[in-house]
Image 1 (cartoon, one colour):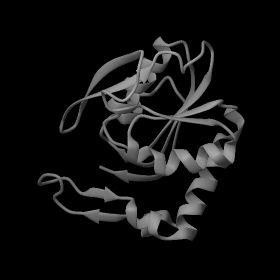
Image 2 (cartoon, one colour):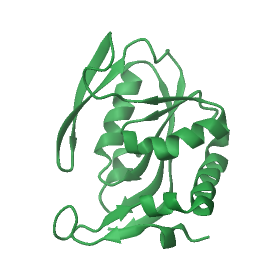
Image 3 (cartoon, helix red, strand yellow):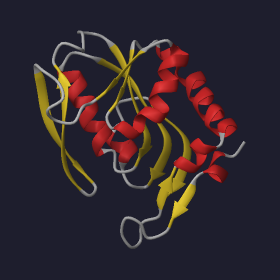
Length: 171
């Protein structure tokens, strides 16, 4: 099954020259969605992760079913003001700065984690999440994405980690 057939491209969004990859159309097709998550699970089983961390809420659409299949815990980095005893950090996104928070007691030293998101472009969000998790003592077992926009440097920022992506677009 070619998963690209299920991902809609929106030309010139969010700005001219960028073709947005809309995974919501893949999620609407139960068979394609199931196939994508099952394939990621096959590729991640050997990592023996204890926790899946989604740096953005959109990553939950991949991270939650993946955590269920792998039998791991699941964590989404929170928007500010939603947790106690928190560590707040800012990361530069392609279209602006955004703060997120992490409860300081969640990550245990040497805990094996996977960073999971729906898409990697420049890799800034994933790289910052990896750094944050490592500062808390986690062992990052890898990074996992449904879609990768190659040529934007994301994989280079994660070169020290096993990075998995199911669908690649040359950008």
